[in-house]
Length: 349
Image 1: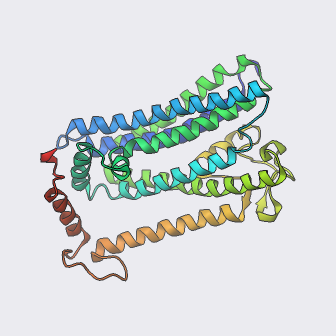
Image 2: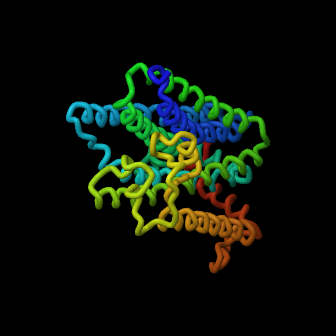
Image 3: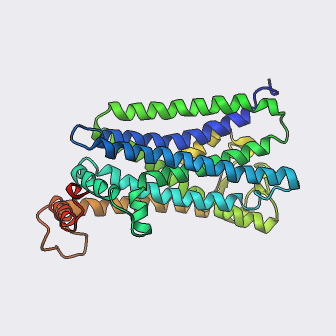
């Protein structure tokens, strides 16, 4: 059986597919709930869906190229050039993904109230040519997040599977890779279908909660990866290869540590899935724990500020604008009308 089915490979592929599938499924369900009605332009909906899939495919293609280069260098040169920079790379992409998910989550949560405004702005943005990087990111916003997510998860999978391949025959890889992709894809499909059958507001709240759990874990993982990268440079090796006992973590920065349940050692198994979704680590550091708590404090404060602006029509400690009425809704209407005055009306696209 070990010659036909490498269990660690299955868990690696399954874990990475789940995390990428969650993001893609939530985005697709969000688009179908919000922009697939009879009152919306079907061309806009199709373009947004294509953005999600093209971003995902572009991330997959690039990760195959980069991952193939790493593996080729490993087997050709006999040196793991990835091991010295793995934690740094993962930390950077975890941080970027966390920031993007956080910004998008807040926007998704308010969609049911500002749906007309979103439709107007998306229609105008998609029909115009981006003049700078800011315009580019707005025009292709639905492609950027799946691109980064698939790229990050794909590279992790390629590297982890490459590490397992040293001790396993080639016949042990096709079956777990295929079954891992299918199992992760099924979970993503269930999330997508579930998002299409529940009420819009319930779906928005549930999907935003899931996205923020993932983002909080990613933010904590980013800090943890940066600390492990520094520790790896200090000891001069790939710390993940030392197991889960003494020497696998920096005792100077450790809050607590358990010699089991590692999401990385022996490919993590089920703990790797918890790491992918919630950011679980068997070795907590001051930085990772503080980062997780600070993330939720900042996000909570952000929602309090948003709630205050909705009720009062202004930000805390700021004077009320003369153009704002009794609620924040009038501010949104003024903004949409302002967009129309400068030529962003969908009728002019």
